[in-house]
Length: 175
Image 1 (cartoon, rainbow, N blue to C red):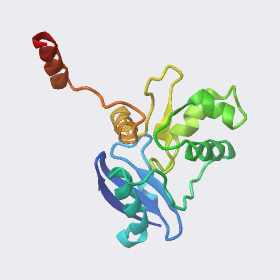
Image 2: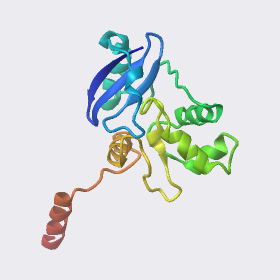
Image 3: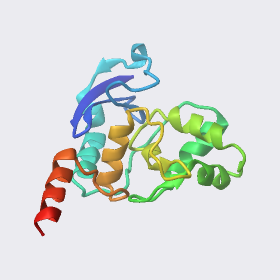
Image 4: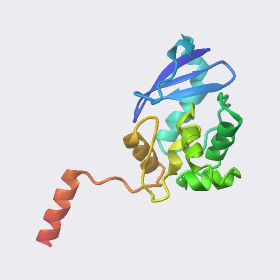
């Protein structure tokens, strides 16, 4: 096992795996916290292909990852994680839609739990799953990172900051 870090627009990511597969991609304050004793030695060369693809993704030049992933999980989790990989860039699905897709339409909560246990965030795009109301819920890296990733992909309109809102109101009053 080896690991490296990657400075991204959403914070420093930690990539973990062996020379053949990516086994973890963790964000700052990842919840649940990964077992860092399994990260192994630092080896930046082992992840050059992943870093290149992350650079392209954050630059808006890549819409899918071509990375061999080996994620440990139950059979149910594996089915959920495979379904996540099938959500197209720039689109979202609800937890209920994922449950139906894997043939377990009543397992919405279990899908949510499996989604939250995805050890390879971004590459296995768990951020593309939202509530049935369209609300952003639960994300290992925090809701703001989820929002940022969905905005990057064009699945959400960029959030309006309070400064922009005040400016917009001033323009409305002048016009």
